[in-house]
Every structure is written in C-alpha cells, then in structure tokens.
Length: 275
Image (tube, rainbow, N blue to C red; front, side):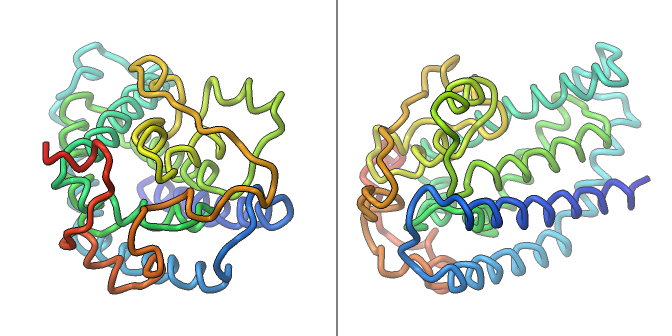
C-alpha cells in the first residue's frame, strides 16, 4: 500500500507538470521574458537537488512518523473517532488551513522569509515555478508538518492525498494561464487559480503579502488576507511586476538561489520588518 501511494503521488506530480506545461504553451497568460528551456533546466536542477535531499533525510522518517502517530491514536482526528471519507475530507481542510498559516508565517518572520524568498525571486510565474523552493525551506516545512500530524492525526492515506493534491494545485496555480472571467469568478471562490496566485507573486507588497492559500481559496477572505491585483491584456504587463524588486538579473542563477537565505537583500515589504 505504501508503494502504491508513493507511486500514485509521483504519477500525479509528473502528469500535472506535463499537463499544465502543455496548457500554458497553448494558452499563455503572459509572454515569457526568458527562454522556457532555460527556465525548465534551471528549475529541473532545483527539483533534482530537493528530491535527493528529501529522499535521503526526510521521506522515510516522516512516513514512519505519520504511521507512528496513527498507531498511538494521537491527534484531534483520532480523538473524534473520524474514519473513512469523512476523515479524509476533514483532513484535507484542516491540513490546508495549517498550510495557509505556515505560508503566511513565512512572509511575516524574517528568518523564514530568507528561505521562502528564494521561491519569490523568480521574475516570472509558470508551472516550473512550482519546483522552485529552497531545500532549507523544505526542511523547515517538514518540521512544521510533523507538528501538524501530531495535532490533527491524519491517516497515512489522508496525508498522501493531501500531499498529492497540494502538489497538483501548486502546479495549476503557478501555471502561466488564466481562466475566462466568468469561470474565474466562480472557481476562485473555492480553489486557488493562476490569477489568484500570480497576484501573490507581485513585487508590490499590497499584493505580494496577500493570497496565501494553496488549495482552498476561502482562507484568505476569511482571515482578511485577500488582495487581487488587476489583470492586464496579454503582453501589456510590465516584466518587473512579478518577483522581487532587486537582483532581477540573477533570478536564474543557481548560486544566487542557493545562497538567497544568507543574502542581505530585502524585499521592502511587511515580510522584512524583522519580526
């Protein structure tokens, strides 16, 4: 069962990456500023490094931790006696709420922001941006998730479904696509769309420090962190609108990405007030 879940997660990851890459190729929302091959190669290197680190140091211990917590009967889910589809659905909601809180904290505390800004240093947003995370952030995130598991107590199946869904949703809302207005209005009320999340990658802190949701979009209106940047017709969005304000010429530098947490550059937003 463990191998089936892991294999299914990999299938969802690869399938989603190829699907949204194909869609954004046919229906791009914004013109690319850099070569797509260069972007794919760079973010592929990032993903390869992160995969090795996660597999070597995190994957097995974390899986054993999830199983151990279930065997001990720890967590709110276990105490409430939840099981079956009810447990899975509620676990997806609760874990996504935890992810919203964690994402928001990453923009509020300077130590965490130093790692998270490696993701925001991308001058563009497309499906490969979903691969762009610093290994330090992934390690810190795993420690945070270990706490989530203790608090909620999801079953391994619910956890794998959450991880697969969060990966698929990240690929979707990072993709360089945009839904028609009528569809966008309805879909974005429930799940995070590319337009919803592209606003979060704006340089302007009014938008960059908002829209923290990953799967379900209603957390931001609920917790008053929703702010949607105005859209522009294809090709009319200035390239400097997305990413960080400084060192834009090094956005695809592997050395700059890896050392980002140790640089002294600031974004000039609420993320950088040294909280």
